[in-house]
Length: 365
Ligand code: NAD
Ligand code: IPM
Ligand code: MN
Picture 1: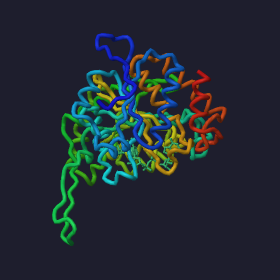
Picture 2: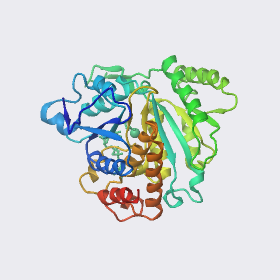
Picture 3: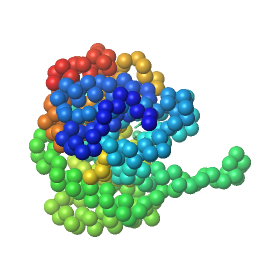
Picture 4: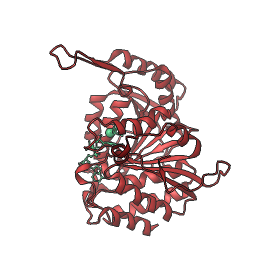
C-alpha cells in the first residue's frame, strides 16, 4: 500500500476521527503540512495517515491509485484531506484525473461545496464591498456533467477530425444535488449568524435545452417542497456579470460540474484570490474529501510563497463536517485574526512565507 507514516487503524474505534492525507503535487506539498500543523494546534482528536499519491509517485513507478485505493479510503477513514494534483512533467494529467476525479466520481462525492466569504474588505477587488456583502456558497454537481469524459475523437489528425465531449445529466444526479442545496440552505447560517434563505440555480437552458430543461424541471419540483426558501434561476453568463457587479444578493448557488468550476474561480477572486478558497466534496454519510480550490501552481511551487489559508480553512471545514465544530471554529477565528493583522503571505498583502503564515495561525490558536 502506498502509505507512509501509517498509524494503526482500528475500525472499531469511533471517537478519534481518522483522516487520510494526500498532499499531491506542487504547492499541495507546502500548504497541506501547514494545515496539519494547525489541526494539531486546535487539539482536534484525529489520527492522520499520509499517502504519497501524486506526480512524483506516478513518475517513479507508474502508480496513480492502488487497485483497492478508493475502497480502502471509504472503509478505513472518516475523511480525506487532499492538496492539489497537476504537474507539468505529466502532460496527459492522467494521475490528476485518476486520483482527484477518481475520488469525486468513484466515491460518489456528489456535492462539491465551495463557500465564498470575504474575510476583510481590503481583499476584495470591488470597491465599497464589506465582509458581510460576500457570504455565499456554491454547490457544484461533482459526479457527472461535462466531466464524465464521455465522448471520443474520430479521424484524429485529419482535416475531418471530430471531437465529441458529452454533457451527461441524470435525473438522479441533478435531483440529489439540488436537494442538497436546499437542505444546506436550511441548515447553515451566514457568518454573522443570520439564516440563509435563497437558492439560485444556474444553468444555460436558453442554449443547452436538453440538459437545461432537466435542471429547470427538477429545480421547480424540489423548490416546491421548500416554500419557505426563495428559489430563483439565472443563466451562467448573466450570473458571472452579476457576481462581479454586486455579490450581495447571493446566498446558495447550485449548478452543474463545469459551470461550478468556472464560477468558483471567479468567486475566489471576490474573496482575495485562490489562496483563500476552501472546498468539500461531500456525500452525506460517506467518507468525504476536502481540498483547497486552488491547483498545484507550478510557477510558485517550492518557493515558500503559496498562501496556506485555503488549505487551513479547508481543514476547518473538514473538522466541522466531522463534528469537531469547536476546533474548526478556533481555526477560523485564528485565520480571521491573521488576515486582519496582515500576518499572511504576499498575495494578500503580508510579508510572511508559507511556513511562517501557517506557524502564525497555529500559534494564535
Ligand atoms: P492554480 O490554482 O494552480 O493557479 C492559478 C493562479 O493562482 C496562479 O497564478 C497561482 O500562482 C495562484 N495561486 C493558486 N493557489 C495559490 C496559493 N495558495 N497562494 C498564492 N497563489 C496561488 O491553477 P492553474 O495554474 O490553472 O493550474 C495548475 C495545475 O493545477 C494544473 O495542472 C491544473 O490542472 C491543476 N489544478 C488542480 C486542482 C486540484 O487539484 N484541485 C485545481 C485547479 C488546478
Ligand atoms: C478544481 C479543478 C479541477 C476541476 C481540475 C484540476 C480537474 O479545477 O477542483 O476546481 O476542474 O474540477
Ligand atoms: Mn477549478
